[in-house]
Length: 178
Image 1 (tube, rainbow, N blue to C red):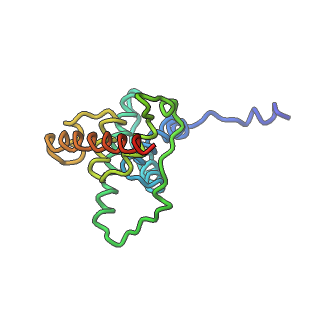
Image 2 (spheres, one colour; image 1 turned 180 degrees about the horizontal axis):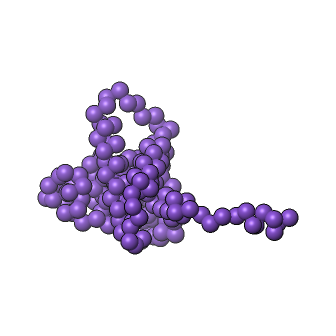
Image 3 (cartoon, helix red, strand yellow; image 1 turned 120 degrees about the vertical axis):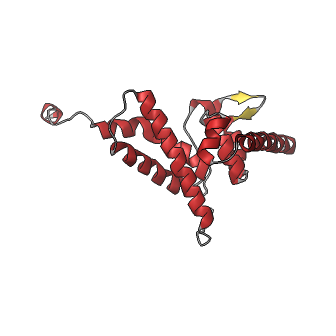
């Protein structure tokens, strides 16, 4: 019986393979910017749909870079739309804390875990959260972030430094409360 069903198995399509390889990374990239799981999932799907409408890239690295850039841009666009739409109400339920099954979550440096840093970043103002996420988690430099966000490079650097200081301040506050 198993032999009969095994003859009907097909190889995954290009879309299925790309989805399997990229959907989690795109979701978490968007989640760090939007801080909303439903919107992050929508952005992830929109990013993949844009990709599927395109011709295929030469290498997986080119594909991944393009997908990440589009995901970040769509996330920022959605954030701007959310800001301009005053009637949009965000329930606390949708602002669930981000959980990512990742081996880095176990990593501790001077008693601070990646999860603690993520939690603190989610409490920061939107501008700091975007800049810090793009630098710390996505690996973009100040010039690239300035192009993505439309800010000046000096402003990006300033927000990064101030955001980092607020993270350190909050972590120290939490450490002293224990």
